[in-house]
Length: 128
Image (cartoon, rainbow, N blue to C red; front, side, top):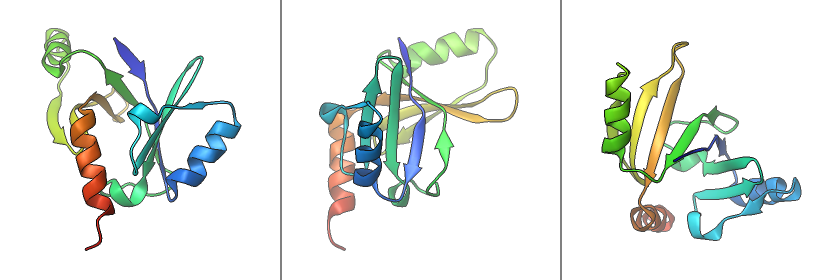
């Protein structure tokens, strides 16, 4: 099943988390890390991502994303059967399918590996 998960790239994850919680969204601690906070409402969810850890996204940007509980190969087979081109990428949080909609907007479908995401977040918070 896909969950719609728009992603907001922000300068300060904690400040943004506090703001969106004030709007009535509920923080999901088990799906969150130092550079990522996931919040859910009755009608969906939003991810808040530290722009500095996002490999090029600027504060204020947003991206349409989806999280899946299926294996990416299953999702990829469904896309291929419909003639949709995609790319599977290894990510700091797991893997994703990247694809482009008819208007040229890049989308991602995430297969999140919580352990890998936690290790990546910890590595980013280590002094260099």
